[in-house]
Amino acid sequence: MKRHLILVGLPGAGKSTVGRLVAASLGTPIQDVDALIEERLGISIKEIFASRGEAEFRELERAETVQLLLDPPAVIVPGGGWAAQPGNLESVVGKALTVYLATSPSTALARVGDVDTRPLLAGDDRAARFESLLAAREPYYERCDVTVPTDGRTVGEIAREVIELALECE
Ligand code: S3P
Image (cartoon, rainbow, N blue to C red; front, side, top):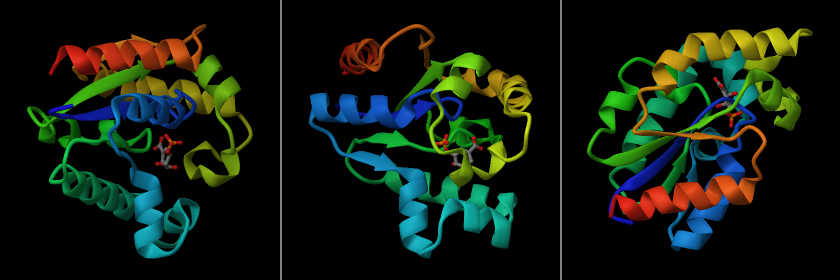
């Protein structure tokens, strides 16, 4: 892989699972931006949101991703909000292939794992939360280089399509 590959999409889109399959198949490292931030600060994403606020978290994830782009090509998996911050997608043009894993709110809700670790999904009406997150983010997500639909597909199928796309842009 000559360029980085960045996976974008709602929590529950399958970014981490698909990313691991793609990275293993392409023999490239996988970089989980949330995990790197947690490691760097020694506290969880939930704690960062609580003690420092979302704006500071967004700055941390922006800076972490910029740093990763300086390393050899990798599969980079930022959290679902990264691509929806103005300027972030634009900053990786020419350096990374951005792939939007498009997922309906109901599928994302059904697939998402641990909601307790995801501060933006806190609250009772999670279905409505996913709807509003997607409504706000879709205009950004759609600016990715390519869109891969994920509803009704297995992670293997999704990963295969992403691998083909990564190889095509060699
Ligand atoms: C967020 C998604 C999370 C994490 C943080 C904020 C978001 O990552 O970065 O809780 O804004 O959608 P996942 O997309 O891996 O859940």
